[in-house]
Image (cartoon, rainbow, N blue to C red; front, side, top):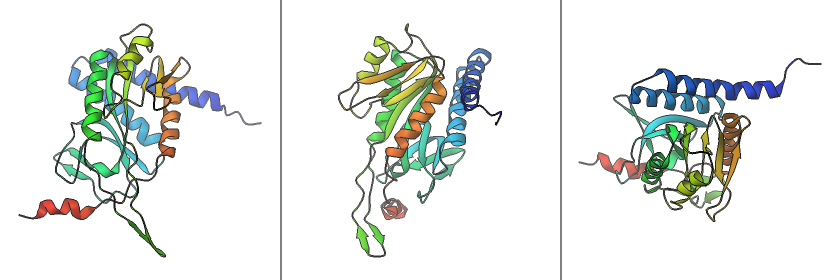
Length: 241
């Protein structure tokens, strides 16, 4: 009989994430440094445990019309079929077609941070995305229909009491358009996710929220089709003087 315990392994994953976020909150005084460290914890978690087809980074997103999003703390994007990702002076710029999900990372959830996250998500969803027909041995598949880009909020704590109660969800529910937050995690308390198209949300409190949220995110990404075939020539038009 093996001495391994899946329960202990999964609990240990959550405890590690919560401990690291709590250490950032308690030991780093400078807001910018604290923010960078928190983003780093989440991006490292996703890069370590999401399937290899995905990559997570702090980045800007750009479309073929030359419009840029705001800087996004956590962008989950395709790294298997994306033809290019720009690296410029330490900054990462990702084509809009390559994006699966975007998150704002904060130390604590409150009304201001939820509105800010909605603005960040909106700045990505409003970008133009191309989709080309896909050639194959027997002919050509039609261009893929664009799949939704998920948006969310990641924090360690919540300023509300209860942490993910009615006030929290009422704030999240205020934008069900381009700024909609589909799901998110308050690592010390629980996680939430949109349950349908009517603006209703499911809340899960207690347990091991960071691990449970990670599994929920993987499940949602599994339901997303592969990113569309990007029209590279639409971007190359910017090379014409």
